[in-house]
Image 1 (cartoon, rainbow, N blue to C red):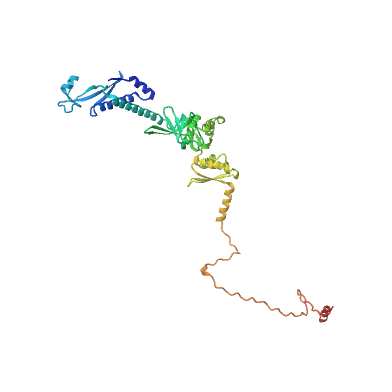
Image 2: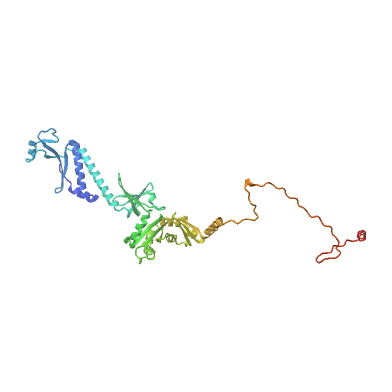
Length: 417
């Protein structure tokens, strides 16, 4: 039986995007397996394809020998010359086999092999296509949710977006259009698996490449991205051209460029920071719009202590610490934010701890336990005896005369009265 399926091969190749040679090889292999199952596994069978006529045929080969020991694999010279007059020893003579006797089971086996080979080739084509697009933004249509995983139709195949790669509080319905970042492409027994992501920081970079020509052309570089998906993102940009403002180029006229990215991320706030080689200046830029008073840098531990006014402490830290957390990720340093009053109090306490102590005169001197002196009895106090007074005959300068005693008669008379 000769199969004329050239047109079928051409049409199948166009529909599946598979090379014509791959389909031809799959059919040849299927015919060989089916023929061996019918006529014997030890037979030397080979399927051929004529590209001009678009026909397949199955040939059984036998070797020309002097003495035939295995009739299924060998043939004598005389018998071989009946088919080929120029046959010699060790030649391989091919005999066309009929495929009509293959039977239903063999035909079904051949069909399954062909379908499996075509499916494998199709998977390989899909894998090669998407492995080259890894790291790009792709459009798709939401199909369904499977165990919190979002299944997206990409046309030729389906992709999966796990819960960990989705933006919090984002929900989709069947038929919604979605843009996502191709994070990974891998081979599995069920075919290529395409992993999508919307929470990956690299998606921010790709979105700005699409919206900002300077970023796509390489004039403006995005050096660092720190992101809290769904809430806030900080990017550090630098320009290779002095005449191009990197922040202004990313913001666009009246914020048109950055607003396109914000709308794609459904309202996620984006801060565009000017990159600086000095880590202290870079941190000051990253903590904007908070005003920075001073920065204390510890290069050995890669940490910084940032001092801000008391009224701007909450602004520098941000809601739930997002501002300082993203600034730390963006710069790559550990950042501690303190209010100016807190720093001054800490400095005063530090000065008090390290200042020399003055001796207190009222404090008793401490004596070591082994050098306690023996108790001494207190000396009795001696009071001076009063000296008898002598009536002076004449007063000297500065002395006070003694008081006169009353006469006995006068005191008695007063008591009687």
